[in-house]
Each structure stands twice: as C-alpha cells, then as structure tokens.
Image 1 (cartoon, helix red, strand yellow):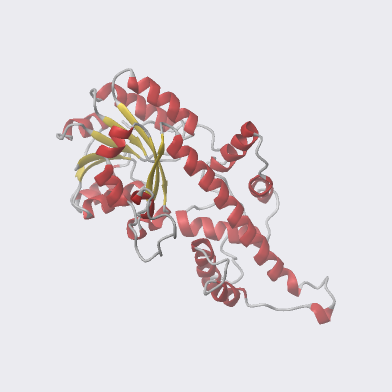
Image 2 (cartoon, one colour):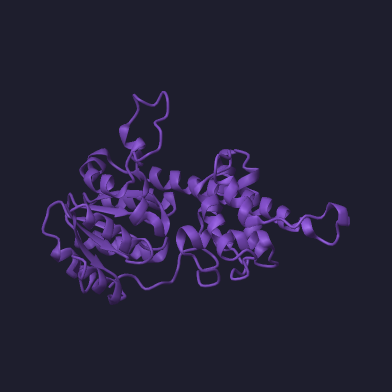
Length: 339
C-alpha cells in the first residue's frame, strides 16, 4: 500500500522504515528536510511540503499517517489535511493525542466524509526492530482497510506463548494490534497504558533506590550492604516474577553506568499520565499508584535521587528521551505546523 508519513522524528522515521521493509510505499514529509532526504536514500519519496505529499499520493483512498507531538502542531496538521484530502481518504494520528481531541476531530472530518483513525503506538525507538504495539480507534471499515499497514508495524505472534483461553478471541491481539473501539478508544487505551508505565517504572526506581541506600552511613555498620545493583538487575531478568522489558532497560543502564551519573534525575512527563489520572477522577476510580508515580515526577524537578536517575535511564532506553530537552508542560505546543 502507499501512504504518506508526516513527522520523521524518533518514531516516525522508523515507522516509515518498517513499512518499507514490508513492501509498502511511503511518501514522507517533515519540516526538517534532513530525515526525509535520509529516507529517500532508503526508498521513500521525500515531499517538499504537505501539499506536495498529498499530491504524490496516487492510490485511492489516500492514507496519511501523522506522527507529531500532541497538541497544536497535530491539530494544525490535521486541519490542513482536512482541507487537502477528499471524501473517503483516511488520516491516522499515530502520536499520543488526547482521546477527547480524537473524538472532536473525527466528528469534524466526518462532515467532509474524511475518515479519522487514532492509533496509540507503543514501542519507542526500538519499534523498527521489535515491532509496535498498536491500539486503534475509529470506524471499522477504515481500520479494516488499513489492516496490511497495522499488520506490518505490529510485532507478530513471535515467541510469546499463547494465552490459554484466548484461542477464540481476535487474532490481531496476539499479533500485537487491536481495534479497541470507536474514535478516541485507541488513544484512550494507550493513555492508560502509559499511566501504568509510570507506575511500573516508579516501582522499579524506588526498589533500586532502597537497594542503593543500604550502604548509608545512617544505618548501623553491621546492617550496611554494598550491593551490586547491576548484578541484581541482571538476576531479576532471569526467572523472576518482576522481569520485564523496563527492567531490561534498567539493567542495561546500570551495566553501563552503575551510579547513573550521566542522568540528571530530572524526570519529565509527556501528558498521558496526567490524562490517566484525570480519567480516574472522572470515573471515580481509585488510582493511588498511578497518581503517586505522576507526582513523583513533579517532585523530581525539585530534588533528584538515585530513583529519579533510574527513571531517566529507562525513559532514555525505550524512547530516547533526553531530560531537560523536552517541553516541561505537555499542554498544546506552539510549534510551527507542517508546511
């Protein structure tokens, strides 16, 4: 299939690469011409503008995958696509937009008979190699039409054992992608996914901080241990009930830098954790762990502990996030829209 990809940052460029590897044809665009030029050498067609990208899409219905930061830049880009595309065409927002924005955008585009699909995309900078976990919202006919694209991006069944009792369920879930429901459902599921991610990361960070603090001079000398945190992380990866990819990333960071001195401990949040807590309030669902994990990130910006440095290390590991170089408040950004 042919599709346009707008936004060629940490994830957008690799999404295009994985799709091309599977035989799809990508027309790519970014306001920074360099990543488009690099992808052109790998087989993509680099567009000079948003309008040029739309014009280069010959297959109908035209498909445009938007991979931009949540907020103003995504909204402005979707608005411009709404003017440039035709009835029946499909816009996919693969970023981390707020699900209520998806509901509103889908309704506005439906008046022009342009279909809008929201796709929560997990996998970070490792997605090109490992595949992306996709949580999709939107009209069934549009999602079904896009199935070859989602199938190519997803990791597939792989070596993960099948879950007993799920044999009669939707086979797409086993392959790493689901149609979660109507417009907004995909990003809602991804939002809660990221809220859980905050809680898991905080649990690891606090646990390793307790291990790290066991050699404190405030403890009786006979009760002090100098523990090898890298070895502990490594042994927990193997057969432990708390093994996970996040632990793998933490182990990699500790092996390379046992004191995590290369990380500031200043931990940012990208918005989904806040939105998850807001949803919990709206639904009157207690979310003590997720709320606490979010507040811990706020606190990290005032004082930094070993736990904060491990959080920074894990964020860098899965997403390439560099603390202090991202927007502090994940509110809509005043970034120039795609030209």
